[in-house]
Image (cartoon, rainbow, N blue to C red):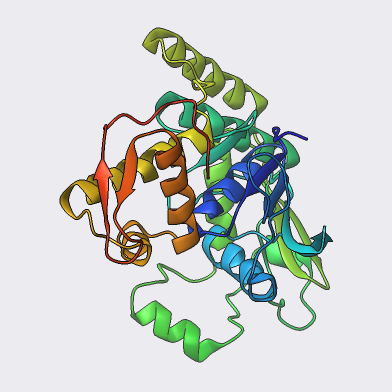
Length: 312
């Protein structure tokens, strides 16, 4: 059993793993499993019930998407599975755009980000963007009357008047006229209006020639820059472990008597996570513990962290 483009394993939950969910949503979707080590073996999670309650809301509030969070049991150990569907529009994590490629998670930047956004935009326009409003038309009004010449009839005159006096409304009754004028100026058809139980919806359709022109210009820019839009993959677990272990080594050099709890508080991971990395560093001969467990200290023997070590 191996990780692939649709599967990622993590020992325990950390909020930074929202980036991995973001990456799945921007690619082909996937499953993030919490409670499985990098060999695919079930180790379980201690706070499965809490995660079941918190994760759906956390994903919705930060990424703006919904995911299925399920509890499963394997070898009498509880695991959390987060199922992520692919999204047609770009999903960002605090302004960053992440993407799943192979068994890696990458942050898109530069020309790669431009191409990604353009492709998502193109797909969005192919499907035709449909902005809507759940509000209602005035009584006895039809789409034909709305599109024809008519006096302004705000649903709530008091609120509309306050916004007008505050300068948030430029003029009355010209919204549809301005929409149609902008469409003509940009050589796209006027939107299709649809009014039903769900409110008023407008369907805009792109000019295919515009999309081809923008795509050609971006392709030329990417080609001239020599930038590879696919991004050279960097194995996610390796990068995470190197960063964590380097932090541990740096702290132990200046404070060799640091405990696991103290290291966890400074680095921002769990004490169990610190234990895992300490064992890896000891096995690699980089550090050793001198003296009794409670009163001893750590000795850093060498600074190099081997690149073939894996962890999460």
